[in-house]
Each structure stands twice: as structure tokens, then as C-alpha cells.
Picture 1 (cartoon, each protein chain N blue to C red):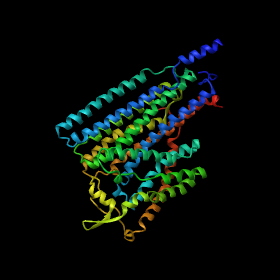
Picture 2 (cartoon, rainbow over the protein chains, first blue to last red):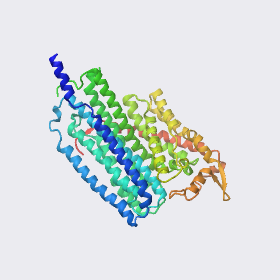
Picture 3 (tube, chains in turn red, cyan):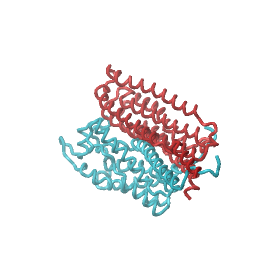
Picture 4 (spheres, chains in turn green, blue):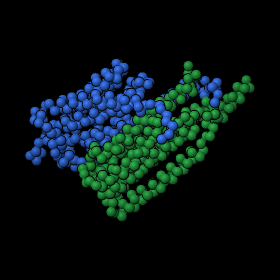
Length: 250
Length: 247
């Protein structure tokens, strides 16, 4: 009886397996932030974003670009550095319950990656199509590019790498090498950002109709395929979680 | 880590944990696949999908199924062959359509003011349902590729017909005959407007009118079969759980 009471007390005192507050707060952060970004685009895209030689373009758009790049570099350095610095050096000796808890935390990161990929690859990328089919570009740093290429892409890169680092530094599953498809699903979408160099080079060279299906854009397509690497990540995770729960679910 | 220790306190907790993981996995899978599929589709078939005046009877019918059967084939290769989940194609297409509809309302309409009836996305649901049903009933990749791929290509135009038919009604405008969809494009000029009212459809058999859409659908069905095979194997590779020692 006493042992049971102690066990119940210990259960009540320990951290929950899944920290739902963190998950919903994280999701809300992305959604509210991107809601604000969309509002900013709506207001200052038309009023200050049509002529890149205008003084107001410098104020509302180029300053936005400079600030976001500084913040992204800082966020990536601090976040990735923190995850690496606080890594578990005895990761193979954690209890199964702790391992399960860490898998949940890892999945909170992956849920955030899902949200970040959605905004980057779907929402802001197709939005770029309608903006440039409406407004003739006179710079590489158009309002939609400043948001799409230099904000939403770095955010999913920061999130994806953080997720990978968390798995690599805290989960026994990932200690026997580098999971190939995890690398594909993080590095592939990351490569979309360097591919912007090709895209801008081409658009600067040729004054062409704004066709989304132009071959110049196929680099984005190729690296977009890498998102399918998430299938491999799911399979690795399902195997690991099933191993932890198998005995109790039988 | 002791093998005798349990990660959960009871069977009930194990069930709850498994269910919670299911939801988190499905959410992530849905949105990551949505992102990859959407960027692929918008940059290989997007212009035909964005605008009603691009939705002709020839290239739209040919291109859209060929480029859109890719991700469904790959996701089926994982969800069916590993988990016996018979909705790989539908879940991809639902994700794509969600991403597209959100964009068409909030951005095409909400930011650049194109009416939704010029920029609605194509309907890919009928082909995706047939693809999943054939895989579920046959359990065969070859049958799904051949019959499902062919159905996917052939069903595209009929599946979109109720939506596009009213916009393919001919009208005369300033002495020129074209479709209502072309007229929409004429009034909503874009930097990607097809050469400012060019004939999107070309070719000798176009003279006979009625054959264009079925012939295009048949050709699309043929290529869709080949693309299904290819992307099924891509899907198997992406679903692998291999670890490497260095990069």
C-alpha cells in the first residue's frame, strides 16, 4: 500500500509524457506570426512594395529583409547551439519511460516542422505566383520574395534542423549512424534556399513571362520531392515506438 | 536501459500513447506531404491549374494528371505496403487541394483580387479515389499502375467537366470568337497571360473539335501509368529506414 502511494506520488510529480501546452503554444506561435506577416503584406505590399526605387520601399521592405536575416541567424545559432550544448552524453542509459517522453518531444518538433513546411512550400510559394503575375518585378527582393525566400524558407530550415538535432542528441534510436531519409527530408528542403540563387540569376538574365512551369523553376521541384523523406522518418519512429509499447499492447 | 522496465504504467496508457502518436504522425505527414506535393505541382502544372483561360481541352488535360499522379503513387508505396492503409492517394490530393484552396481565397483573391471563378484549382479527387480503391481491392502494384493510372488520366476531364463547361461556352467579343474563360483572362491581364489571347490549343486535329479532349486524356492516361511505376519505386526508396555512417 505504501509502495503504491509512493508510486502514485512519483507519477504525479514527474513531467507529463507529452507536453501539450508546449505543442499548442508552438503551433499558435507559427500561426499568429504568419497571420501578422500576411497582414503586413496586405497593407504594405500595395502601398510601399510596387517600386523598388521608391524611398518607402527601402523603409518597409528592405528594412524588413535586413531585420529578418539578422533575427534568423541569431535564432538558428542560439537554438541549434542550445540543443547541441545540452545534449545527453549518456543517451543509451535512459529509462524506457524517459525515451518515450523524448519521442513525444521529438514529435512536437516534427509537428512544428509540418506547420513550417506548409507555410513555406505551400502558402507563401503559391502566393508568390499570383503576386508576380500581377506586379511586374523590378528587383530580386520583391515583397513576396522577402517573405517567401528569406523568411518562410529559413524558418522551416531552422525548425527541421532543430528537430533532427533533437533526435540525434537525445534519442537512442538515432545513435547508430545518420538516418538517411531524415537527412533527405531536412537537407532537401534546405537546398531550396540555395536554389534561389539559380532562380534569381535566371530572372535577372531573361525578361520572360512569369510562368510558374518554366524550366528555370525545376530546381525547386527536385528539392521539393525530398519532403517525401518524411515517410522514412515515420517508419523509423513507428518501429522505435512500437518496440517501446509492444509488450504492453500485446 | 533495462529490458524488463516498461515505458508505460498500464495497457490503457499504452493505448492512449499509441493513439496520440497516430494523430501527431498523421498531422505531420499530411502537412509535410502537402508542402512537397504543392511545390511540385504548382511548378510543373501550376499555370494550367491557376487560371481558367489556361484550362484548355488539350494541354491542361494532358499535363495535370501526369504531374499529379507522382506523390499519390509514392505515398501509396509507403502507407499501403507498410501499414495497409488504403488512402495514400486521397490523403495526398486532399492535402494539395487544401493548400490550393487556402491560397486561391486568401492570396489570389485576398491579396491580388482575382475572382475565385478565374483561379479555382482543378479537381483531382475522382482519380485519387479510384487509385486507392483499385489498390485496396487488388493489392497489386501492377494492376494499380495499369488500371488505376489509366483511370486517373481518363477521369480527370470528366471530373472537371461540371466546373469548366460553363466557361467553355463560345462568345463573340470585338469580332473575335473565343470562350468565356478566355474573356475572363482578357479582362484580368497577368504577366503570364498566354500571349494576350493566343490559341492555347494547337494542332491539326483541333479542326475537328470533338476529339481533342478524349485524345489528350488517353495520352495522359498512358503516361500516368508509366509515371505511377516510377514514383512507386521513388516512394519505396523514400520510405526506407537505412542509416549511413557518414555523409
